[in-house]
Picture 1: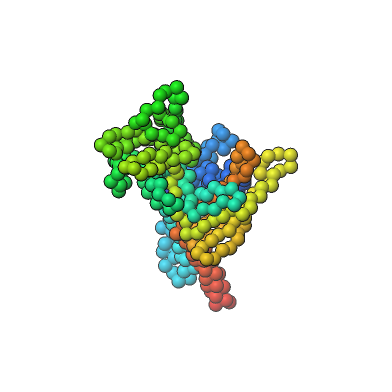
Picture 2: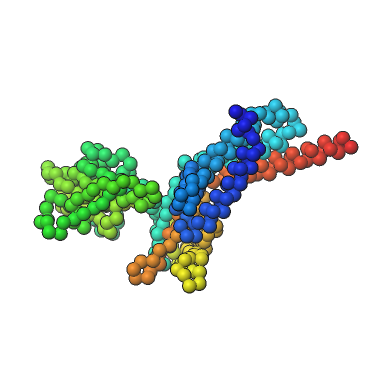
Amino acid sequence: MIKFLSSSRITVACLFLLFILTFWGTIAQVHQGLYAAQERYFNSFFFLAAGFMPFPGAQLVLWVFFVNLICSIILTFKKYTQWTNSGLLIIHFGLILYFVAAFLIFHVSRESNVHLAEGEMTNVSTSYQDWELAYWKEDGKDRQVTAFDTKDFKPGFQIPFENKDFTLTVDQFYSNSDAYNDPSAKKDPDIFNATRINMLTPKPNSKEKEQNIAGGAFDLSFDHKSHTLFLYGVEPKATSVTIAGRNYDFILRHKRFPLPFTIRLDHFKAEFHPGTDVAKSYESLVTITTGSLERQVRIYMNNPLRYKDYTVYQASYDTDSTGKQYSTLAVVKNFARFLPYIACFAVFFGLALHFLIQAFLTKAKV
C-alpha cells in the first residue's frame, strides 16, 4: 500500500491538478471575486465543474500529495541517511514545511474585509460570515462598543455583558433567517426593533456562508420587567432603547476586528471589456496611516498590500443604486505567512547542495 501511495504517477497527477486549479482559480477571481473563488477552488475537497462534473478541489489534492510525499520518504529513508543524499533530505524537509504552512494558514489565519467608497476610511475589518451582538451607550461623541460573538448563542443563554442596567438572554437565534413586520399591527411597547420587525423564521444555511443572514429574538430585562428585542443582520441602523435614563443601542452585525492601521480609499478604478459590463480589471488607490506615518499604495489583482502579519487584497467591488462605487478589500491576518518563504529557501538550498555533491562525486571519479 505504501509503495502504491508513493508512486511518482500520483506526484505528477497532483502537480498537474494543482496547476489547473491555480490557473482556473486565478481567472475565476476576476468574475466571481476573491473570496468566492477561494472557497470554490482552493478550500474545497470537490466542486462541480460546468455545473455537473465532480472535480477535485485543492484541499483534496494537497492531502493526497502530502500522503504521497510521506510514503515516499518512508520507503527511501535509508537512502537519506547517507551524506551524499543530504541535499535530498533537506529538499523533502522543505516540501513537508510547505504542507505544514498550508495547514496552519488554512486553519489559523483570519479572513475579513473592508468595504469603502472613495474618501471613506476605517481601522476595523469585518468578517465575511461570523456575527456578533454589539451595544453601546449614547454618551457624547465617544462610543465604547461592547460586542459578543454569537457562536455560543442558543435559547436560554444569558449573554455575559458586564452591565448592571440590564440583562440580555437569547430567546431564539438563527444563523440564517428571514425577518418580517406587520405594518397593520399595533406597536407593542414591550417589543423593540428599529425597523419594526416582529417575527423571524429560520432558513437552511446557504453553501455560500457569506450569504447567510443571522437573526434573533432576545429577552431584554430592566426595571424588573422583560421585553423582547428583535435584531436582524442586515438592518441599516441599531435599535435604541432607553434604560435607566440612558440610551443604549443594540445591533446584530458581522464580527469586526481592529486593525493596526487606518486605511482610506482615495480612488477606485474599474476597466470593462468593450461593449460589456464585465470587469477587465479593477484597482484601489489607498492611504495607509500608522501613527504619524502615511503611505499611498495601489492594490490590484496579484498585487496586495503587506503590513506585518496582514495582507490586503483587491477582492471585488459593487455599485449602489445612485451609481456610487464601493471597493471591497480582503484582509488576511496570518502569522505563518513567512513559513512558505522558509520552505522555498530550504528546497532551493537542498537542490543546490545536492547538485554540488553530485558534481564533486563525479569529479572525484574522474
